[in-house]
Image (tube, rainbow, N blue to C red; front, side, top):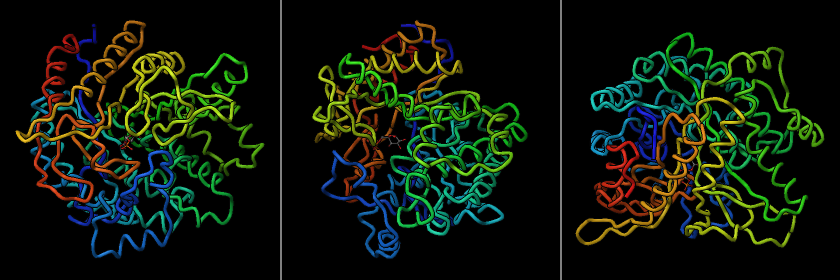
Length: 484
Ligand code: BG6
């Protein structure tokens, strides 16, 4: 096992899944706040869990009882952040990935000046991290855009949202730039076509000018322009900082070596990466443009957009990796869910309760593929195992399955590094139990730290160290040498 000296070990969270305090400190509602927990979670069809309508949004905002809107409460990190940071420091974290809730700084997204209470909240967090020697890695946009921009403009479909985002990004760089040198623009930028409301505030019934998918690609184009402008601003305001992109790595294998299966797999993998390609190479892949042209879904591109995208590309490539899938042209091939996708079941892999197939070697494959393709430093900013953990009577949690998951993935990372991949660091998803992005469950737990809260918000919110907590601490202490 050899991880480079100074390898950044840590964990990753997102504001909308941990903070709570959805209407405190001057914060406005975000798209995440109206996400509904449905008790009969459909693990096979995530789109049912993330479906949205104007009526559902109004119902969420007007509901007196907010039980079914778990992201409004998160794990109440708004009030517990010092305790949580201390636990991360106890594990020896070198880095912590968090996101900034856009609506804490700009409650509707359209204000000219930021809400200073929100600014101070994050300043406190960064000062505390500095004191604890934990380097921040910050995502600007992680599924939490202002709800007002979604309902008024159909989110990123409208070009005016670019200016709102750039104003927000500049505020972040101005106030937090002295603490934060590693930034990510859009979490899982490719997810815009899978859950477009959470990612980009697009509401299907507002897509009246063009079909829904065309609106998504238009919104993606606006995010590319905004991302380029944010990188430009970062270089001006915090010249020693770096900007990264973030993509969901949904590695697929051909189910058989039948040439048609191989081709279908190739296209699936290329489509997964095209959103990253634009931000690394500074141009749209020709195959993507050709496909969109044939489907009559090309986005409207304004003069100057392509120059910006070309000029302000990213410095590093980050990604999430949880599972892999197979692909086949056989319509009867057995399917299984993955991270907000449905794919073909791989007979060689086991899966968790949500159908996500566990594949450490796929992480090595992904690292080698991404590094060879982009030739930029890589950062694994999400990887982990969602399970229903049991808190024992003595407040312990025996999660050896999680240790097994991480161990096998760390071994795969070490093999990829040995293959020649330049890997900056690793942040597990998530170091502490939080609200699931796709199912809004609390009971889908990822953490090294157990949070006493159930799906309906009952519980003490007390934090307990799981067995994996002590194991990860040792991994960090030995820089990945001791994985026993
Ligand atoms: C990633 C997201 O796709 O997967 C996170 O960036 C999310 O926000 C994570 O929580 C795990 O997915 P889920 O649906 O199990 O929470």
